[in-house]
Image (tube, rainbow over all chains, first blue to last red; front, side, top):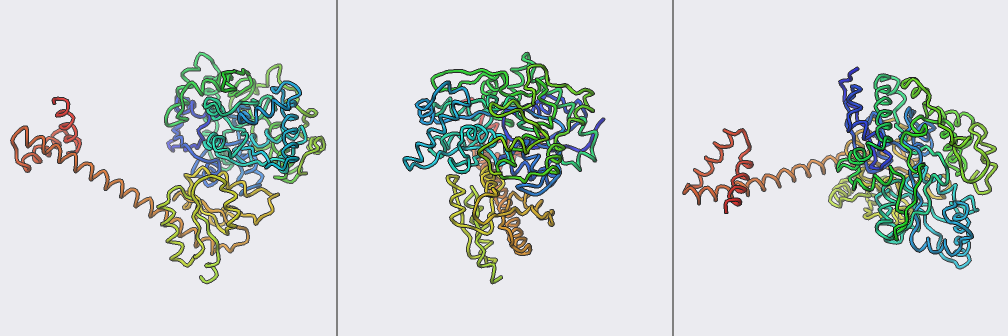
Length: 390
Length: 196
């Protein structure tokens, strides 16, 4: 199949755009007859808007933005589908040296345990209130982002109300590090490479990989306008095949060096390949004095069924929108959220549903706190939590 | 137009020249309350303090995502909506995005007033991009002139040519090698420096 028309695909320079970048720059898309121009963008709003109005045919997009767009919350309603999941996890929570010290003072146990770190945070928040000190500031990348929901889920587990007890501020990823330097934020949750950049500068510690908060969280998706996908089924299939090849290529450790070189190129992420390598290897320097932490769940590009869109993930993300007052709760909206993710297209194109292998959490989420997640009973999920907007 | 003088318009733009051009266009059209904001620190607080009816921001500015936080339902201030919300005029939205400007507009403003502001922004952004391109072209033309003058000087000195003869030689070589005169001139300068 050949399409004469050039496709334009938008992306934000983050490591979790890896499958998209490798699909194009390694030639997997061309093998599928696709002619693609990758366009680097500076904000999620731009990516979303350019996809919405047709300046992009496809985009590297925050999974919750794709869902919000489908539901018409926060912004205009434009039906979007996600036939390929670009990655699970991959963010980290990073805190200033000062906040790290304060957490250690209050810790009643191992701070790598999110229950302990959240409790220590609650103690700090209470003390600051008593002393009349200003609330702590937490940076995250977008109102509809996993980063926002992961931070909230974590701190709320110990009773910290993210809207009342601290300040949540949206910061573009390139401004995160600078915001720590100038004291604007005390912590942030962001994707690679920004956590590592802050640690390398000696100004912050990585407190948690987000996979310690939730074992599986849909991070970025390949997003398409529903109307475009319906008019171009062959291009959709070709995109999914090219992305699958790319994800498999990246997950093969024998290709790690080449993958990192491709992703890190000046017109892509424009960073040292060593920094992307740490992310793909899941081995990060977590403190300025040189401690490393390793996890095979840090950023999952295609392994363990990560590439197949998972509707349980869509349910969970929608549940967070409801929990924090971004969306009303209704069965119609839940169904619309779930239908954003299209495992059916993925299975049809690739001829198989690759189910998550053994050892994955039974409910498909694996949160560190609360009961198992039931993707169809959000009332129950919401009733579990003391801190919520609904 | 009288009522539009009361609209508070904020411009968030990293390019102070472009912001000035846009401000001038809006003032000429009768918008008297135009405020420019620079820098990224506490952007949201500064915008809330101004409490604008319309916010214009350039698309190259990563702080656009910061503005999205204004959509938080729980926030007890005047809630802005995006231009995009009613989708009634997708052509002008596309034109705006193409020109590189985005707008956030407080809910309840009449569409014709918004369109007017957006049209001015689009034409000013396009004008700025034209000026920038022309400036680039002028700059590179100036650079080329300098390079050609230097090459002429080298030829005149080394080969005892007049200025006219030196230029003719450059031009003939450029024609023969199907290159620009400035490129030939640059090679002469490079060669001369290597042979020093």
